[in-house]
View 1: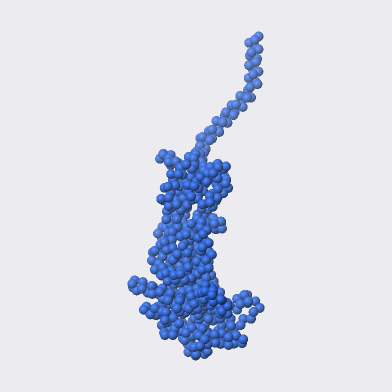
View 2: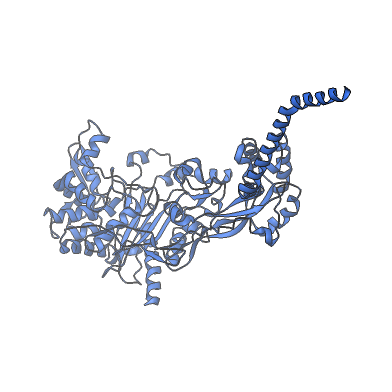
Amino acid sequence: MRILNQTEEVKNIYNKTRPLVYVILISFSLILLRIFVLQIIRGDEYYKRSRNNFILSEKIYPARGDILTSDDKILATTEPSFKISVVPVFFSKYEQITEQVDRLSSILDLSINERKRLVSKMKNCVGTCRHLPIVVKGEIPKKKILSYSSYLTSFPGTLISSSYKRVYPFGESAAHITGYVSKINQNELKKYTEYDSEDFTGKTGIEKWYESTLHGSYGEAFQVIDYMGRKVELPEQIDGAVPPTKPAVKGNTVRTTVLSYLQETAAATLGEMAGAIVVMEVKTGRVLALYSGPSFDVNLFARERIPDMVWREYSQSILHPLVNKTIRQTYFPGSTFKIIPALAGLYYGIVSPKSTFNCYGCLSFGYETKCCWNHGGHGNVNLYQSLKYSCDIYYYFLSQELGIDRLTHFASLFGVGSATGIDLPNEESGILPTREWFRMNYPGMRLNNGMIMNLSIGQGDVRMTPLQIAVAYAALANGGVVMKPRIIDEIIHEDGSVEHMDDEVVRILDIKKSYFESVTKSLWAVANEDGGTAFYHADHTIPPAAGKTGSSQVISNAARRNIDTAEDERILMTQDDALFAAFFPYKNPEIVAVAVVENGAHGGSTAAPIVYKMLRAYHMKTAILK
């Protein structure tokens, strides 16, 4: 009976537990199936994922391309340096970030601002960001990195990697040509979407204009790290599982048109004076020298962040050292402008080379009186004498015959009022005061004779950059071909191929050769005949040049008379700007040179000697080469 009852009980227990057994068997089967899928079917995929959890991808920054002179001197290059980064996920827990950064700061000598920025980045770093390196300190020389490395072993997630530092061997003398690089900003990140937020970009000069050419392409390196964020050296049989390193590609090198000896001569010649010097080839538009003074130490700017003290010193200076005055500062061209009404007068048949106007020293019209710089007068003056002596009265009379429309149209043909198109950023267009310009800027005011007279001698409202003056004089020297100036000769690609930049003609002026000859012969007299405004300051030991002096007022005579004679500095700062533009040699011209000296007073005594030093340097060098 007992046995029967036991059998019955077993059957009852089996019936009750059977569903549970099925559940266990099914569950176990599912587990086995899942293991099969994970280990067999998708094993390789998850193996790679698990490896990647400990593989750090690190971007390799490319070396920036070099900038060379035409005679193969280095204007800008990159030198190896090191940087220190941290990986947040290994570096510290959130609540320990400030403490850990303080410790790191004491080792790396971080400034208060650098420390604050790092703490902010670490605290705002969430998600994927916590697995990516954050640069703590860059541009570290080799000697310094060796002293840091022994201390960094106590900081988890700290990485040392190679980098580059931009260097400018010519410093101040070529600062406005090369420009400089600095840390990329948010606006630039929107433009260069493929760039890294820790990268550097060109801010001014060639560095900015040719940014995409010079930058290069990123590489990528993969490092296996342990749970502390330290790099791990793998055995050869395992190392193959790590993706291979993709090397960075250096940026292209650019060779400029600049001649190093002329650029250095320009910097030395202008010295402590404020102003600009331009030297350009007459027939090609190749710029051989482009100097703006005072300049700035470009190596102080080529950093992640420009030191506040350095920025204030330069940006607040009344001499504007950060402004490239050759293309961004406009001046009244003064008497250097007179070549345009002179040619226009010949072209429209208003004057001939022998036509004269009588200069009595002053000219009265209506309620106004306008005087020549020579208040004693020049007597009867023809075209030749008007330029040789720089007679203002001649051009006052001529301007009334020409009228505003013909005068400004002729000026526009020489590029006045238009950017030259040089391959440098932020070029100014200058001002050409046409009838429409006067209507917009002086609404309701009648365009009177005095305004047109002022324009004819390069005063009033007309303004030009030194490069625009050079372009106009080059067109005069080469017989009416207006060339587009350029600063780059060729781009040298990393594969060795060379891309040459072509000369570009803006326009060819339909003006008789005899008209150009009449004006250029007059400019020869300026520098080579007794009485010419540059004769006593010209260098007569080199072949003859032809040029024109100019002195342009920066304030009115009435305003100058109101300055207290005790205010020496203010008197000096309101002196006329001095200008001289010349082409050389007079026969078969090769180059044009322009000098503008702010508050230099007299074009003949101040600007002409500067230009002649440039011409002499060019002549001596080319004579040796020939």
